[in-house]
Amino acid sequence: MIPTTVVDDRGRLLALPREPERIVSLAPSSTEVLLAFGLGERLAGVDEHPELPPGVVCARVGGFKTTDVEAVLALRPDLVVASSLHLGRVVPALEATGVMVFALLPRSVGGLLRGALRLGTLVGRGREAASLIGPLEARVQVVVAATLGARVRPLVFVELSPRLHTAGPGTFLDDLVMRAGGINLGAVARVDWPTLSPGTVLRYDPDVLVLAAYPGSASPDAVRARPGWERLAAVKAGRIVEIDSRLLKHPGLGLVDGLGLLAHFLHPDRF
Image 1 (cartoon, helix red, strand yellow):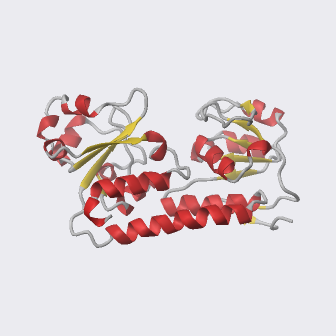
Image 2: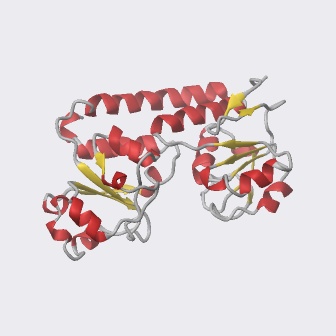
């Protein structure tokens, strides 16, 4: 038996009469969580982005930003897992037809882990979820304990794309930088995911540059060659680090790995 109710990240009480047999995941991060819980065989559909492990075959229901609602409904899901991007159009359309939607909307590393645990409980994998999430929470606490007493917290600019797309205040990536012992330069913005001007980065002069690495991202050499960027403290000190974008940009369980890598780079003396 599964619990009567759980709460999703909207504060909605959700109840399933039995374990869901057909789950649709609308975001790569929630697909990662569901696969980690051993639910690959129950995935009826996912967005077009995630690479699925061998043996997991399911339908694609459009892009992360362009979900095909009719394609989702055609799969007759028992449960849909959605992200913040889907709240405006997709979730209301699905719920209007009676489809149950669990919204996973993490704004912190801890919030991600707690939400994933509740999702695991909802789908009947509470024990598996607890055994996976518990050690991840312990790893986060180790990092926080190591960086909490740092006398100097470097100013960090996280570059999510060569257009200088970054993380603003109150986002899960803002929280990750803080827990790693840094100060997020993107917090100067007033929106969640701003694009900063080169002049803004030069004016604030970050101590560390973090490049979210993916095909098409800027290399450290390309960053050093930008006009005026040779004057940045991070460039002068050689404090430029590339971290796999999957460990930074997507609020999946890989964020814990991203946290550890960043903390080690910011405060190598504490690890």
